[in-house]
Image (tube, rainbow, N blue to C red; front, side, top):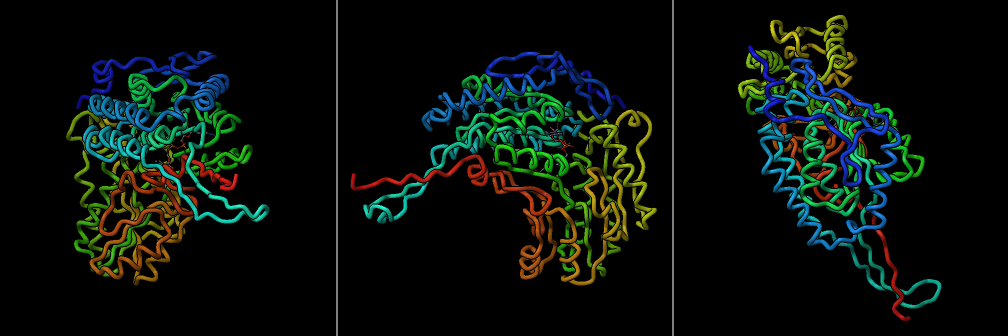
Amino acid sequence: MAITVLQERDRLGVKPGRLFIDGEWRDASDGATWEQVNPATNEVVTTFAVASKEDVDRAVKAARRAFDEGPWPTLNARDRKAIIQRLVELITANGEELNRLQTLENGMPIAFSSMSVVSSAMAAGVFDHHGGWIDKICGSTYPSYESAPTGSEVQVLSFREPVGVVAAIIPWNAPMMLFAQKVAPALATGCTVVLKPSEYAVLTSLRLTELIEEAGFPPGVFNLLPGLGDPAGEALVTHRGVDKVTFTGSRAVGQRILAASADGIKRVTLELGGKSPSIIFDDAASVAGTAMMAMGMVSMGLSGQGCVCQTRSLVQRSVYDEFVESAAGLTSMVTFGDPFDPATTSGAIINKRQLDRVLGFIEQAPSEGARLVAGGDRPGGDLAQGNFVNPTLFADVDKTMAVAREEVFGPVLVAMPFDDEEEAIRLANDTEYGLGAGVFTTNIARAFRVAKAVRAGTVGVNEYTVMPNTPFGGYKSSGLGREGGWGSIEAFTEVKSVIIGLSG
Ligand code: NAD
């Protein structure tokens, strides 16, 4: 089996990446660079400049100037919308290239990159959706009343203003979609942006930035800083010129960002990790189908490296064995291989450090009493050069085990039996996370009861997917605030009340 990562790199004409600050491409001030590695082969695809503290300062000052001196925040709605629409057209026209770049940077199979919720078409849709809000962001008027000190009549109006300079930090697993999720509402509301992509996936961010440049945004409105968490990320979230931080990534980094934002009382939105449950009742329409979906979600596409993967299957005891058997059966449908082969179903773990972490959970689980039903090892042959892990299923898992509590971020599903609805809800909520959940039943009343009782930001009933442009975020340690659709417009604006004296 030939893996065509480097041929694809040459075909796409990938060049070393640079920083984009104040409308200009430049190297890092200290000349530092980093390697973009593809996890299917661990080959170096290219190098890119990584921002120093000085570069962060320069980018934030450029974004500050573009915000404070305009014209972007005060540009009329029609003109702002036209530029965003031009960007939508450019993303659409370059969609296939973007999908292939995403496979090149993080190794997700091309079929997944092109067809799923992480594709360029979805990213274009997110810009289109938020561009559509621009001329519909309205405030409120309140009944006039008598002001207490003077007794004269006043009228109060409230309206929404852009929150200011936005620092956006994204992870590597869905880089195009998350770029759009942050940048589209920020630009639509009139904010200016400094975005730091993950050091493990820069190619789509670099290409999207070229398209932003081509679309004609004024200099400083959007700045791209490829860089490391420390120093670039740290310098960005602690910079006094930043008004808001929007972050998607791990809980540990989210906690640091929240603490750092206290200085300056920055606005913060956090989209963090999860340990999402799916609750399968014995009256589910198809227990076997649900089992295949559950196993498929953690083993197809990103191989379980998705924040919303439902990695804990809570299954009613009477259908538990059927579920486990069907879930194990799905693992034979997983195909590893060249990520650019449309027949490849599943990608590699992003880097060696994360690979060791996933294997560590797999090794620990049996020693805690879990039963290994499928997987637990790595494919050999040519695939051994990449970071692949076979889809892994543990049954008879107890809620105290590490594999049931921690976000593994790999192709690992755990199955746990329950007896009744009350126990299912208790198990579902027995986690520090609260990002997503699923309820599988044909009993509509039970579906509603359980959906209401589970403490998670998104609950699917007989359904697993996430919907773009709807409010998305987490309860508990899974995050702070909501982004998506109107939720993003609220997250990127401040509300101002203006009191007008009517007797003057
Ligand atoms: P990560 O937290 O390691 O890194 C995310 C980003 O933060 C990267 O750009 C990184 O460079 C940056 N960073 C690291 N240290 C920093 C610091 N001290 N200050 C500022 N920035 C810093 O996460 P990851 O491994 O890239 O992504 C996986 C995690 O992301 C998982 O936990 C997953 O659940 C989560 N995730 C959540 C969502 C969601 O919407 N809730 C979506 C995708 C991924």
